[in-house]
Image (tube, rainbow, N blue to C red):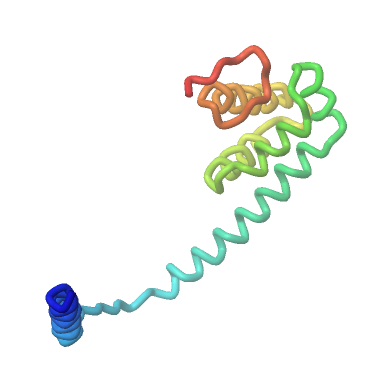
Length: 137
C-alpha cells in the first residue's frame, strides 16, 4: 500500500515538473499588417452575399417560378430549403444566372439548374427530395 502511494506521488511530481518546465519555453507569435483593401473587400463581399441571397429568395418567391417548379415535380418548400443551405459561392453563381436570364425567357433553365442540384444532392445522400433516386451512401 505504501509502495503504491510512493509511486503515485512520484508520477504526479514528475508530471508537474515536466509541465512547469514546458511553461518556461518561449512561444513564437507573429503579427502582420493587414491592408485596408483586404478588410474592405471582405466586408463588401459579405454585403454582396446578403444581396445575392435576397435576390435569389425573391426570385423563388415569385408565383410563376413556384408554378413552373411544381410542373417539373419539384416541391417548392424543398427547393427553398436547399437554396437556404447553399454556400456563398453557389448563391453568387445562381444569382449571376438569374441576372443573365432574359426577363421571363430563361426561367426554365434556372429551374432546370435547381432540379439538377437537388438531383445530385439526392444521389449523394444529402437530401431526400425525389422518391425515384437511390443514395450512394
